[in-house]
Amino acid sequence: MINRKILLYITTGLISFFIQAQAVEKPNVLFIAIDDLNDWVSGFGGHPQIKTPNIDKLHAMGGMMMSKAQAPATVCNPSRSAILTGRYPHHTGVYRNDINLKNAPKAKDLITLPEYFSKYGYHTISMGKIFHKHQVPDSKELEEGQWAFEEWHHHLGGVGPISSERPVNGLPNLPNENLNSYHSWAFDWGPTKGNDEKKMLDYKTVKWAADQLLTRDFKGKPFFMAIGISKPHLSWYVPQKYFDMYPLDEIKIPETKENDLTDILNKWGEQAYSPGTSWERAEKHGRHKEAVQAYLATITFVDDCIGVLMDGLNSSKYADNTIIMLWGDHGWHLGEKQKYGKTQLWNEATRVPLIVKVPGLTTSKKKCDGVVNLIDMYPTLIDLCGLPPNPANDGRSFAKLLGNPDMIWDDPTITTDRYKAHRIYDGRYSYINVEGDGVEELYDHLRDPMEHNNLILNPAYRKIKEKLKAYLPEINEPEGPKN
Ligand SMILES: [Ca+2]
Ligand SMILES: [Ca+2]
Image 1 (spheres, rainbow, N blue to C red):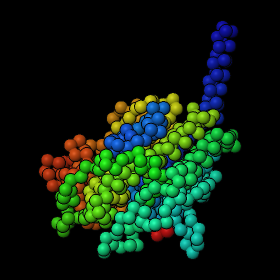
Image 2 (image 1 turned 90 degrees about the vertical axis):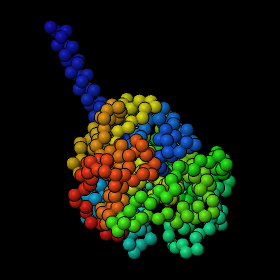
Image 3 (image 1 turned 30 degrees about the vertical axis):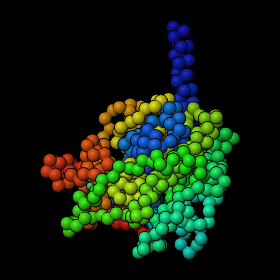
Image 4 (image 1 turned 90 degrees about the horizontal axis):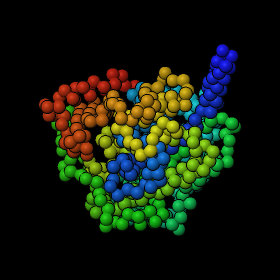
């Protein structure tokens, strides 16, 4: 009897100790945002020649590849604002790059992801682009989410030494091109001088982050560290050695279909979209292979940066109790649909790489085909860390899916391009609706992963179209004020 009492006491004590230990030892979070990284990451299948050995290593060490992840929006600010506030653009009115969430009536009072972690006892720290940058009116200051972190650090360097000649790639503009447009000057690539990646901004960022992990105790609290990598955003200037990894004569350019755009009509019966200016420049001067080479090279540079960060984490005391969430903020076209760049609602711009490592939960070299949206990261992270749910979150936690990656997880998800321009995707079909222009598209990814054949007028798919159309938002918040 006495023995049983002692046993009960010891057991109760152990349970209580375990609960207390759990309460104290919350997992840390390493949140890695990569600007304009599409699915050209080894394992995601976006390009057969890509070399991302460090991301492969993360995958082998338990980083789950979420193969059907979608962005909430297809350009930086609305995507990041949705991810960080946990609310979709159609709920906040933050649809474009020039709408600062802090001035948008339906977004400005939301508790952002890092603030939420801060509120529940985490030390939050950041370097690199996490929030989008906005010019502060009547000032030279930039507002880039400094307010959201306990420690916010400005990045440490420029883009690396490059030739002063512009464009470096020598690609001429078109005769009637608007030379003030962003792509007219930013659609450029070439080697940096000196072949030294250590002089690059992103290298300095990850080196700094690795040093923090190796030397800090973050005030004895668990940490939420957000690291922003600025490449492979334009322009594609990286050391020559990365270009050399992809010999030009061996480059495969993405599969495209001639006249791909002719089956997408607006409500006036006209072809809704024309080839993009950057694509026309590359087409006219035969530079598609070079552009693809440059994007591949830039991604492999980014992968090297990920390696530096992972080496830092793996050598630190936080190696076994840190959740990693690595994501690209939206996709990017490299010739598909006769386009270079982001925006619009095709798969090339909506699909993103998302890799999640949760110690003790995710397993080595596993892929998950569940349909998730980057807006789900907020509720998932607070769920994994045992923080209370945030009722303002639009997304849903996929923590359960991480533990059981083969379960059915196919609720349709939404991506927005602008006011009343949405895409609904369920893992098999994508349905696009741009209300103002009366554009509708439907694609069957099982038969047509490149979205070449618009099925919207095919009566055999009418029920599928109606099913997905029912997921369009009923209420669309008007656009928030500019900056
Ligand atoms: Ca971006
Ligand atoms: Ca087509």
